[in-house]
Length: 139
Image (cartoon, rainbow, N blue to C red):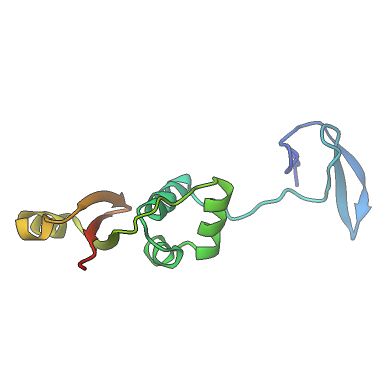
């Protein structure tokens, strides 16, 4: 396995530093980090990270976002913490969402009665569209 960069600092000043459990050990001269292999994790496309954070800011729960984009709610929670996202208070509003294909979205928008309320946003979600709508709670 060709080691090109340190998994911690991405530095390229790497030297061999012994063998552990029949695996070559390496040392990064830049940050003094020891490692045996490249850390290759499952990389999630930045599109889904951005979309998950947008949906979180729109008021959806972690589990709702998980069901929509297919990424674990724990991962979404970690993204929110790592980007230090603060959810704005929407005490008077309750978001609802629907997922449409293009033709369904056009038919939905044609009905003016469905568009009344506090506000809405339409966002692309892969080959579908998500309509998020906020309605005031009725007292």
